[in-house]
Length: 193
Image (tube, rainbow, N blue to C red; front, side, top):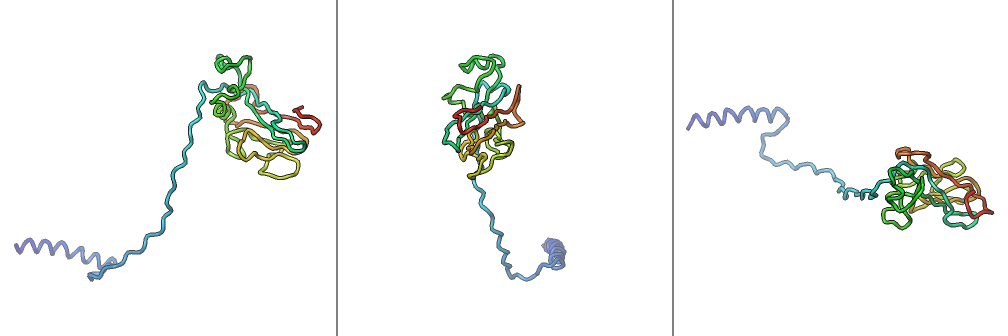
């Protein structure tokens, strides 16, 4: 029995010496641990629904730009991507011709198909074209001539004054003929020139 105590004491002594030597204490006084730093409670991870478009759009041919609503000096512009008819895509979506829209108006997949065809705007990061007015990027708002991002829809833009409004797809999307479209606005006309 004595030999077991000697082994336990013999093994415990070096550990106690190391604890004291390293700044520990041999007293039995409990120490209060330092409070843990406050941690931010992580919120739920954002979820993004995948785009649903079957069949997927072929390469972009261009973007059709039109005046959606006209209030004289202030106009809301709208866009629709045009794609090439590859492997009978236009017929498969109920259209005809060498070029067609990604889907017919009212099709439940139209918004996602348009997003796939155009990609995300380089300035806002939202799905839809990157807009310009007279070659200058659109901004978040104002009353001077120019263009201003629509708050809810990147496929729309608010244009004020006369000039050329342009809409271009993301450089990441497949392009056949062209990746942009435009409209020359004149107050006297209710249409693009």
